[in-house]
Amino acid sequence: MGIELTALHWIYVSFIFLIIGFMVMRRDTSLVCIVGIFLLAITATSSLSGAVSGIFNSFIYAITELLPTILVISIIVAMSKALTTTGVNDVMISPFARLIKTPALAYWTIGLLMMIISWFFWPSPAVALLGAVLLPVAIRAGLPALGVAMAMNLFGHGIALSGDFIIQAAPKLTADAAGLSVNEVITASIPLVIVMGTVTTITAFFLLRREMKNGTLTADPATPSFSSDKDETLSLSLRTKQFIAVVIPILFAIDVWAMFMLNLQGGDATALIGGTSVFILVLVALIAYKGNGLEKTTSYLIEGFQFGFKVFGPVIPIAAFFYLGDSGFQAILGDFLPKESHGIVNDLGVALASIVPLNAQIGAITLTGVGAITGLDGSGFSGISLAGSIAQLFSAAIGAGAATLTALGQIAAIWVGGGTLVPWALIPAAAICGVDPFELARKNLLPVTIGLIVTTIVAMFLI
Picture 1: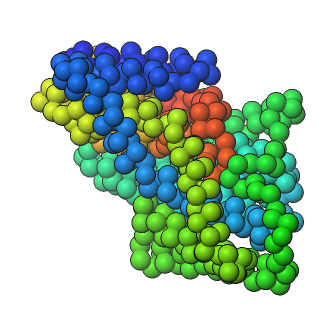
Picture 2: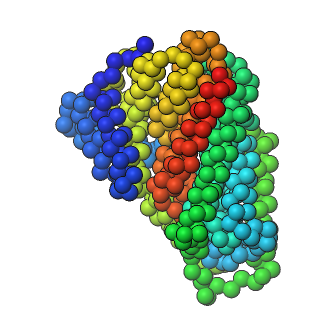
Picture 3: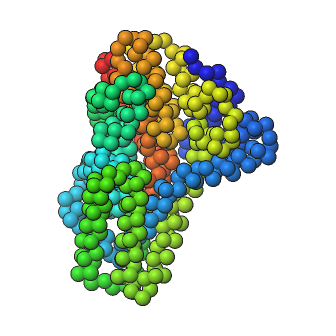
């Protein structure tokens, strides 16, 4: 049985549709989200001052949640600007430039490398590792920055994270909720992950290639993250550039080794990459600018932080609204939801599951819908336990398919919320590539939607 939906739930649903509509029309949604936050707050608290304060508090909550990502993006951009300005970047990418010579090769090479690294360390550190080196190579090969961001998104935050075969955090959560073993969920997810990944990435590639042929999408070498005018007064010898270009991959290789040896994943792995990037920035500034290295280090950090907050600025109000759909509601506004509530988004998922017929076909469609709804908070992980519980409910009624339904809900939740459709969840790839996160979400929408439809149909036959 689903819980009774309150006015808060209906306000949230209404604004979800409004936000989607504005995004489809390519209009900014910040104001819509601010109004939504205010209405949720005043409905919950019945206090005008509490509602006004709730807007500010929701912004603080969103910034706090996003701050680690903002920091690592800002630092990576600062380092990248230093490497580009000093000419070290040109030396670093020259070996890759000889191997990656076409847009197609760039798309698939970056995507597959992203997937492999993400299996072991999750996507955020993988974006930082690959973006700084391979983005300029891909652009020189003719692949637009948006195409690079799509490849990193779909292969990393999509394929690798939705299966999570190595770290196994996602299948552990869904398996526990469904009363299954982790191996059962992983085994059931393999064909679904393959179908979802294949359909989505191939669809995205053909759509990209069509836009490139039409001239509507071009490889612009002046991407915000890595473009910077060469300092004409700066003169580094080729030997010095080669030395720095060798040291940097060695440092990142040591990071990879440390991740394996110390079992660092997710935020810990990202922090290691970020700290190493700061070290590289300082090293490059001191070697290149000598006596002015102290000032140049600060200058590059300022540039990086300016870029980071410029990119995240439009996203904070939107993230603040969607965080109210999950655990952020209680942290921001207080305990105003029904006692049996598990958060607005999860309540909506339960309500959907409670009003549909119990059979294999409807079960597959429902699990995809529930997964997608719970992914709207931008986490991808917060609602997968609910997906596991609902999968158990349907499988008990159907008499089969528990593992397949569980895996399907997991895949839908993570593809939507883990970083391919929700704008602030895909910001790491968008920021590293210097593209608009909302435009990236729009480009991902059709391939991911087609992938989810095909995967849901395949799941019906596997139940």
